[in-house]
Image: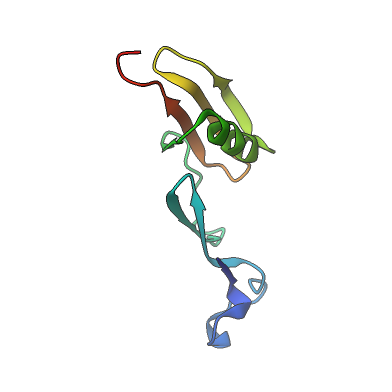
Length: 109
């Protein structure tokens, strides 16, 4: 679901030039609902030292989400097998959000 500022019922609330900016977006990513919106430049500050962690249900889903978030982003640790996860990656998406993606290995494996 996505709504732009220019689509809201009361057009008096729309800042000039913000008609196409995102007022509210909602998506399901790996069974987790993410919400987002565009933020005016005078209030926007990129997240640099915090990561969103997303646990995926399979290697295939982890690879799929990694490809989407990595497109136009910055890779800190490419998707790989680790001692704790069959898939693990660290990256910053093209919008400036940092992510930890993983599909954990079964405990005791």
